[in-house]
Length: 431
Image (cartoon, rainbow, N blue to C red; front, side, top):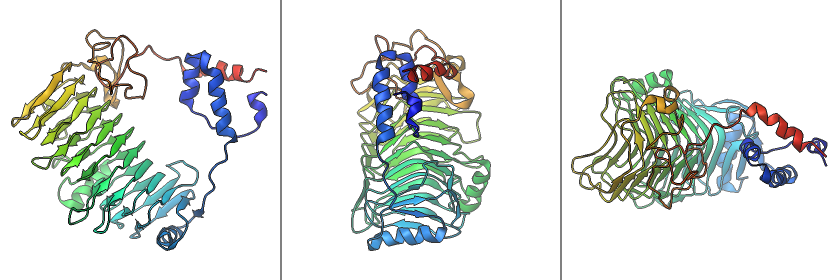
């Protein structure tokens, strides 16, 4: 049967087709996967909501046996003080059609927090959240139980009044928010939102993701932009501290944030965890530009294969501070600033890092595209091999050559123009 004769909507990954173009021998397997996507039945929505009133009522009803899968129809929902508190395990709230830009929940700086998550195994996905006075999403354990298994996927957060995603233990610090995932999100602060942050807080009390005493979170494949203020230092794009443990931060793009990624702060530390395959770029100084990756009282962290390029004058790309920052692995990072100890921080392994990168090594530093422009001696095939290092910033295989490349990107020859994929579609349509 020809593909065109199916007369059905075809859901397949452009990446899968693209790789089939490069490797025709797996074309048949790829078409089989496409067929599976076509014929597999889609999960039916338990309830679809169309108004703010319906949304609030339906979420509240989950605490009394109501439907746990809530799909939001396309539209802009002006919350104007309403907030969505999820108290029941296993609730999913997402857009009906999966397009995050077609469902907008707008706090209008009247709603303090759009989503409050105080239950386990909650999923928030495929929507845009904007103009919360404090936190668009707040994950918090309660005095009665831990909160685990939160998934925040494909959410666009714009102009939070404080941190975009806040993660907290309960007030007594006996129950904790653990083992969550934040993936595929765009989190950004614009000039308009920046002015509102200062008006609301009288400081630059804002940042991307901020986790306290949280264990086992995975932060991956996100884009975080614009967390800076001219009048004061902003918090990090991604920050886990207050004895958080085992955080994995990987394959994120962080652009123009005063501080990129942080484990620990001062004496409020972090235990273990991995920071790898991230790209961090900051342009000209806004007045308080700071470090790309900061480890403070962080023990046992592994920081490898990140690319950091700063055009502001702060001297350090990566720094590890205080005696409690110890037993650290910092390898294979590609930077244009120093990697250094401050206040007696120590490492177990500090190797195969480059701190002299130039702008012309990369595709487009101004946009944060820190993919390698070409092969470069001392960078490509020059990294220390690590058993955990199996992919790069794009999720592509490592290594391609005899050894991995230093930095977040594993260089490969330029890929064919996507316009040339048309011949592949023609082949797929042959008898």
